[in-house]
Amino acid sequence: MISEASVEAAVGTRLAPRHVALVRITHWINVLGVLGLLISGIGILVSHPRLYWGETGSLETSSLIDLPIPFINGPSVWMRPYHFLFAWILVLTGLTYVAGGFITRHFRNDLLPAKADLRWNRIVDVVSEHLWKRPDADAASTYNLVQRLTYLAVVFGLFPAILWTGLAMSFGVTSVFPILATALGGHQSARTLHFVCVVLLLLFVIVHILMVYLAGFWRSVLAMITGYVPQGGKTR
Amino acid sequence: MSKILARRSFVAAGLAAAAGASGLGAAVYLADRYGLIPPDHAGILGVGETLTYAAQRLLTSGHSLAREFKRSDVSKIPTVNGPHPTDEKYLALLADGFKNWRLSVEGFVLRPISFSLEELKRLPAESHITLHACEQGWSYIAEWTGVRLATVLDLVGAHPESRYVVFEPFPNPNQARTVARTLWDSIDMADALHPQTLLAYGMNGEALPADFGAPVRLRLGRQMGWKNTKYLSRIVVTDRRDFYRKKSGTWYGGI
Image (tube, rainbow over all chains, first blue to last red; front, top):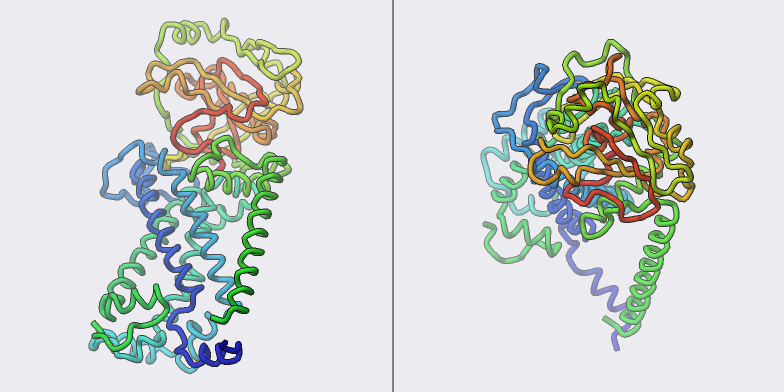
């Protein structure tokens, strides 16, 4: 029979995982949540693809942005419950990730940049490095400065902003916290900012997937599923 | 893995599963007891609906008030969402200022009463300048005048164990498809007894226009546009749990 001590020793000598279970599980549930919210959100948007500033806005008033898509009535009604179901999935998963990230020191160890790195020329270095050469083997084991700053901005800036602007459109929520709407300029401003934040998130997702592709698509995806970067294979 | 470890994790997983299941059971029992489960709780979408409704009912307990605005904020052109009914019965009522119209309030009440428009106007009136937003995305601000639904429910003696108030409009042949017969909708008692919930007969200082639901429409401060039933003809108080409009979309409009 194997003693517990020898089991622990064996476990201890294994490679540290590239992504811990918390990050892997919440990452894929978030993918599901964002995809569901995006599809149902487009369904809601197409019923009135005009954006306004302030509290009010309609076909009888001037708009801020007229999106070049046709008005389609209908999807907004039956897509709405899907939007809130996926919102709950995303919010509960996000809270689990953030709480777990603090407890397991994921933010401090993996995402918080070193103080010495927080200089413009370091950021420019990393970006120009990215532009001129493929990520090297080291890149698979840690996050670079730009990645760290981007992930932190998405987790602690963009997602909370999407949640805030969404809640600011809720009559129930603003009856308790009116400042959620008034601080943004009103109901329609919240709707417009909700849209702007989602566009920013989409830009992040597009660049994120592009970078995953450049770093070796299956290698990166497998690492996010199993926790380990496949060894010995081709990098691309 | 050693047998000890395997057994230990098996017991831990069993305990966690048992704690999770009993925790969920207790949560469902408490949620039902405190009226936190919406009528459209069934199915996978019902999970989201229940979470939203329960979270907001916990958050908004104690009649939290919707935002109110200044008279100068009132929109110059409020949006008409679908024209008024054009059947003979409605046009006849409209032509004589709804003198023969009556609003029947019945159901789980001690004294069912049928109100005329004049009788409703004799009850204490109040006005609120609030935002009306459609789920499609547009919104306008208007001043609504009427009697509190709570006052009317008090007059008819609504039973304290009532769960929902159902609003039935005139059938509207202009409505597309077959929704004319199913346009009725319901709200819970938290919204029914809310101080901003009006049976509104006035809009922006004048009689409620036909296109906005004349003679009387429901106005809810904390709900989206579609919950504000227009062209009211009957109000039914009920303690049934399944009395809501079965249609796609969400029942709870406070989102």
